[in-house]
Image (cartoon, rainbow, N blue to C red):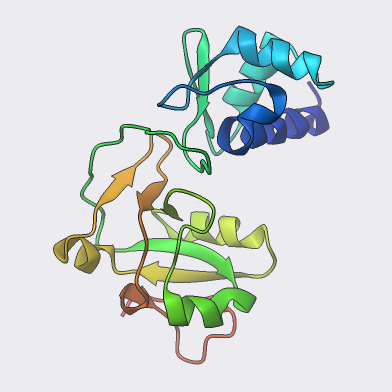
Length: 190
Protein backbone atom coordinates (compact mmCIF):
# COMPACT_ATOMS: atom_id res chain seq x y z
CA UNK A 1 0.00 0.00 0.00
CA UNK A 2 1.59 3.28 -1.05
CA UNK A 3 1.94 6.14 1.41
CA UNK A 4 -0.63 8.33 -0.37
CA UNK A 5 -3.26 5.60 -0.12
CA UNK A 6 -2.35 5.00 3.53
CA UNK A 7 -2.88 8.70 4.32
CA UNK A 8 -6.20 8.82 2.44
CA UNK A 9 -7.57 5.75 4.26
CA UNK A 10 -6.34 7.12 7.61
CA UNK A 11 -8.06 10.48 7.03
CA UNK A 12 -11.24 8.69 5.94
CA UNK A 13 -11.22 6.61 9.12
CA UNK A 14 -10.59 9.67 11.29
CA UNK A 15 -13.44 11.58 9.69
CA UNK A 16 -15.99 8.81 10.04
CA UNK A 17 -14.89 7.22 13.32
CA UNK A 18 -14.51 10.57 15.13
CA UNK A 19 -16.81 13.12 13.53
CA UNK A 20 -19.30 11.98 10.88
CA UNK A 21 -20.25 8.29 11.14
CA UNK A 22 -23.79 9.07 10.00
CA UNK A 23 -22.48 10.49 6.73
CA UNK A 24 -21.75 6.97 5.51
CA UNK A 25 -24.56 5.30 7.45
CA UNK A 26 -22.63 3.69 10.28
CA UNK A 27 -23.51 3.92 13.94
CA UNK A 28 -20.86 3.90 16.65
CA UNK A 29 -21.77 2.20 19.90
CA UNK A 30 -21.58 4.14 23.18
CA UNK A 31 -17.82 3.51 23.40
CA UNK A 32 -17.13 4.49 19.79
CA UNK A 33 -16.81 0.98 18.33
CA UNK A 34 -18.20 -0.16 14.98
CA UNK A 35 -18.00 -3.57 13.34
CA UNK A 36 -15.25 -3.63 10.72
CA UNK A 37 -17.41 -5.43 8.16
CA UNK A 38 -20.07 -2.73 8.57
CA UNK A 39 -17.47 0.03 8.11
CA UNK A 40 -15.98 -1.62 5.00
CA UNK A 41 -19.42 -2.11 3.43
CA UNK A 42 -20.48 1.48 4.19
CA UNK A 43 -17.23 2.91 2.79
CA UNK A 44 -17.63 0.89 -0.42
CA UNK A 45 -21.28 1.93 -0.75
CA UNK A 46 -20.23 5.58 -0.44
CA UNK A 47 -17.52 5.44 -3.10
CA UNK A 48 -14.41 4.85 -1.00
CA UNK A 49 -13.75 1.09 -0.99
CA UNK A 50 -10.81 -0.36 0.90
CA UNK A 51 -9.98 -3.84 2.09
CA UNK A 52 -9.53 -5.33 5.53
CA UNK A 53 -5.83 -5.71 4.71
CA UNK A 54 -5.60 -1.98 3.91
CA UNK A 55 -7.43 -1.13 7.14
CA UNK A 56 -5.09 -3.36 9.17
CA UNK A 57 -2.10 -1.73 7.47
CA UNK A 58 -3.35 1.77 8.37
CA UNK A 59 -3.96 0.75 11.99
CA UNK A 60 -0.47 -0.77 12.28
CA UNK A 61 1.42 1.86 10.26
CA UNK A 62 -0.11 4.92 11.92
CA UNK A 63 2.70 6.33 14.07
CA UNK A 64 0.17 8.15 16.27
CA UNK A 65 -1.74 4.90 16.84
CA UNK A 66 -5.04 6.72 16.24
CA UNK A 67 -7.16 3.58 15.93
CA UNK A 68 -7.80 0.52 18.06
CA UNK A 69 -8.97 -2.84 16.79
CA UNK A 70 -10.65 -5.32 19.13
CA UNK A 71 -11.42 -8.52 17.24
CA UNK A 72 -13.92 -7.51 14.58
CA UNK A 73 -14.44 -3.95 15.87
CA UNK A 74 -12.57 -0.68 15.35
CA UNK A 75 -12.68 2.76 16.97
CA UNK A 76 -10.71 5.98 17.12
CA UNK A 77 -8.73 6.23 20.37
CA UNK A 78 -9.57 9.93 20.97
CA UNK A 79 -10.53 13.17 19.23
CA UNK A 80 -14.25 12.54 18.85
CA UNK A 81 -16.74 15.31 18.26
CA UNK A 82 -19.65 12.83 18.38
CA UNK A 83 -20.83 11.51 21.76
CA UNK A 84 -18.79 8.50 22.92
CA UNK A 85 -17.57 7.28 26.29
CA UNK A 86 -14.04 5.89 25.97
CA UNK A 87 -14.27 4.64 29.58
CA UNK A 88 -10.80 5.94 30.42
CA UNK A 89 -10.14 5.97 34.16
CA UNK A 90 -8.71 9.09 35.81
CA UNK A 91 -4.90 9.13 35.70
CA UNK A 92 -2.19 10.93 37.63
CA UNK A 93 -0.43 13.22 35.14
CA UNK A 94 3.27 14.09 35.22
CA UNK A 95 4.08 17.53 36.66
CA UNK A 96 4.05 19.12 33.20
CA UNK A 97 2.30 18.25 29.96
CA UNK A 98 2.59 20.14 26.68
CA UNK A 99 0.30 21.58 24.03
CA UNK A 100 1.33 22.35 20.46
CA UNK A 101 -0.31 25.29 18.70
CA UNK A 102 0.67 28.23 16.46
CA UNK A 103 1.24 31.90 17.28
CA UNK A 104 -2.03 33.16 15.76
CA UNK A 105 -4.00 31.35 18.50
CA UNK A 106 -1.97 32.74 21.42
CA UNK A 107 -4.15 35.82 22.12
CA UNK A 108 -7.26 33.66 22.57
CA UNK A 109 -5.33 31.07 24.58
CA UNK A 110 -3.92 33.76 26.89
CA UNK A 111 -7.46 35.08 27.47
CA UNK A 112 -9.43 31.83 27.66
CA UNK A 113 -6.94 29.03 28.25
CA UNK A 114 -7.19 25.82 26.24
CA UNK A 115 -10.72 24.70 25.37
CA UNK A 116 -11.76 21.48 23.65
CA UNK A 117 -13.39 23.38 20.76
CA UNK A 118 -15.36 20.76 18.77
CA UNK A 119 -13.81 17.80 20.62
CA UNK A 120 -14.71 16.32 24.00
CA UNK A 121 -11.36 17.14 25.63
CA UNK A 122 -8.22 19.22 25.32
CA UNK A 123 -5.40 17.02 23.99
CA UNK A 124 -1.99 17.26 25.68
CA UNK A 125 1.33 15.63 24.91
CA UNK A 126 3.75 14.02 27.36
CA UNK A 127 6.79 15.76 25.82
CA UNK A 128 7.78 18.88 23.90
CA UNK A 129 8.75 17.00 20.75
CA UNK A 130 5.32 15.45 20.31
CA UNK A 131 3.61 18.77 21.03
CA UNK A 132 5.83 20.49 18.45
CA UNK A 133 4.81 17.93 15.81
CA UNK A 134 1.15 18.53 16.64
CA UNK A 135 1.55 22.31 16.39
CA UNK A 136 3.52 22.04 13.15
CA UNK A 137 0.45 20.72 11.34
CA UNK A 138 -0.85 24.31 11.29
CA UNK A 139 2.39 26.25 10.78
CA UNK A 140 5.43 27.19 12.86
CA UNK A 141 4.79 25.46 16.20
CA UNK A 142 4.55 27.08 19.60
CA UNK A 143 4.80 24.66 22.52
CA UNK A 144 3.04 25.64 25.74
CA UNK A 145 3.84 23.96 29.03
CA UNK A 146 0.81 23.00 31.13
CA UNK A 147 1.27 22.86 34.91
CA UNK A 148 -0.69 19.62 35.10
CA UNK A 149 0.57 18.89 38.61
CA UNK A 150 -1.01 22.09 39.93
CA UNK A 151 -4.17 21.43 37.93
CA UNK A 152 -4.47 17.96 39.41
CA UNK A 153 -3.90 19.33 42.92
CA UNK A 154 -6.74 21.81 42.27
CA UNK A 155 -9.10 18.96 41.34
CA UNK A 156 -8.87 18.83 37.56
CA UNK A 157 -9.23 15.32 36.15
CA UNK A 158 -6.90 13.81 33.55
CA UNK A 159 -7.15 10.69 31.43
CA UNK A 160 -4.54 9.06 29.24
CA UNK A 161 -5.32 7.09 26.10
CA UNK A 162 -3.61 3.86 25.07
CA UNK A 163 -1.47 5.83 22.63
CA UNK A 164 -0.23 8.29 25.25
CA UNK A 165 -2.45 11.32 24.57
CA UNK A 166 -3.46 13.09 27.77
CA UNK A 167 -7.02 14.42 27.96
CA UNK A 168 -8.64 16.97 30.25
CA UNK A 169 -11.82 19.03 30.01
CA UNK A 170 -10.06 22.41 29.71
CA UNK A 171 -6.85 24.15 30.78
CA UNK A 172 -7.45 27.53 32.45
CA UNK A 173 -4.92 30.16 31.35
CA UNK A 174 -3.40 30.36 34.85
CA UNK A 175 -1.94 26.84 34.37
CA UNK A 176 -0.20 27.69 31.09
CA UNK A 177 3.43 28.72 30.98
CA UNK A 178 4.24 31.19 28.21
CA UNK A 179 7.69 32.40 27.34
CA UNK A 180 8.00 36.13 27.98
CA UNK A 181 7.16 38.03 24.78
CA UNK A 182 6.18 34.79 23.07
CA UNK A 183 5.20 35.36 19.49
CA UNK A 184 6.37 31.89 18.57
CA UNK A 185 8.84 29.29 19.71
CA UNK A 186 8.66 27.07 22.75
CA UNK A 187 7.28 28.04 26.11
CA UNK A 188 9.06 26.70 29.16
CA UNK A 189 7.82 25.58 32.58
CA UNK A 190 7.99 28.26 35.24
